[in-house]
Image (cartoon, rainbow, N blue to C red; front, side, top):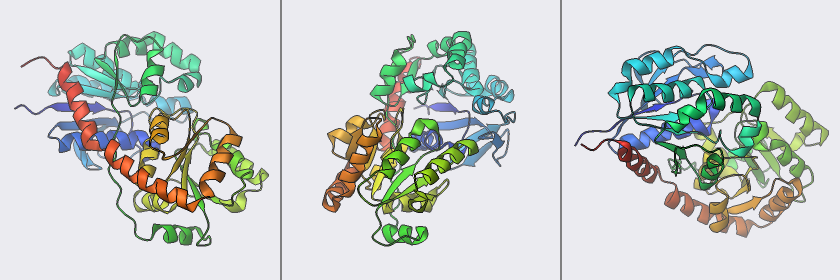
Length: 393
């Protein structure tokens, strides 16, 4: 039986992108575990800078074969996200026919549009994963620029795809509202179950320099207006229960400065811990040592960090704009709240007030993560989608 060769075309594998990078790498690892020759083509982008990686050759990166091509450096925020790389389409024209299917990630970047266009030119079946960029909230951010790009090239490119890979029903519904002719297929991500960190609870409190009995609320994501951090800080300021908040992530320096001003104005400096970007052992210690995870996003097409928190046995509080809201409600894994500081504050007070309730939730969280979000199941869904697009032998 012929081995499937699948190319994943991404704009960036920068670790600071968080979930999108984790998902792409996890997807390819899972496919390779199922016998698929899956590979990644990426630029060397590191959120505007450059990753220290070999260029123009296959190299093992985070356990998967990747080829990096150079991007043009950019300082302006919009151009950073666009990730302009003249070498990207040239590489695809030279090597694209070596693959049976091209899976494109993102829609509003130069690499993504290059990949969709070249795949069409070469007659290679392809699909696109928008990463929530076509959801309602995202389309209101610099919306005029996105609608202009859709009109000029991106809508035509997306309509040439065999499918639009959505990771949740909510993303499929909101993407479908834009009227693309390509069908949306819902295929959730999986996760790799995290290693157990012995003594995570006490080790985390020791590292933060807080008392052993201090309750800790964890936020982990990139720092961006989309994530609802201002709302979380407002909720913390008026909460009845006493707890500290760990903010793990990085973002635009000017935006982080506004958050720190809000913290100071609310008198929260002593209760807020800025952990920066965390990965590996530090990441799992944080998630396994916390009491509650919070992500009050204005829009989240999946929320892989939410699943990672669940896999660490951490009850979650998410907004009703996070696509995993139905799973959290159905399996009683925490709380789903509207984008309202008072509702978020009440949910924090309710969950933190009962150690017994949180402990019962921990057991359900662990079970739900293992049962519903395995990478093996996700890979099988992808393989079915790929093979349905290929010509019969």
